[in-house]
Amino acid sequence: MYKGFTPPTERERSKYRAAEEAGLLGRVLEVGWAGLSAKETGRIGGMVAHRRKEKE
Image 1 (cartoon, rainbow, N blue to C red):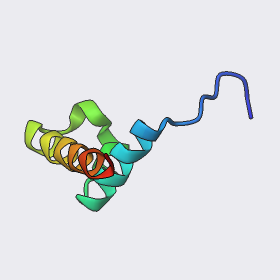
Image 2: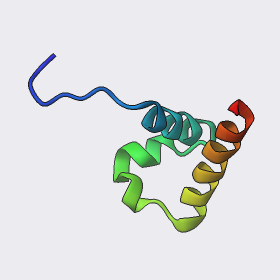
Image 3: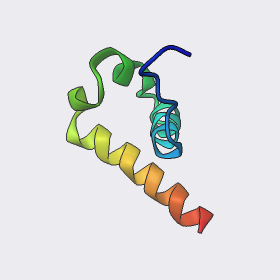
Image 4: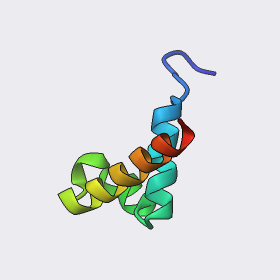
């Protein structure tokens, strides 16, 4: 590993998994999280929250 690399946290991994399931991963990689609309961001956030609630 090179200097400055930090592995993604579980929270980051779950966000990317949710984006992939919502069909938005390509857009996230292209424009970043800030480039998503509120609707798209909400959809991803809802999926992450639902998964976290199911785990508990």
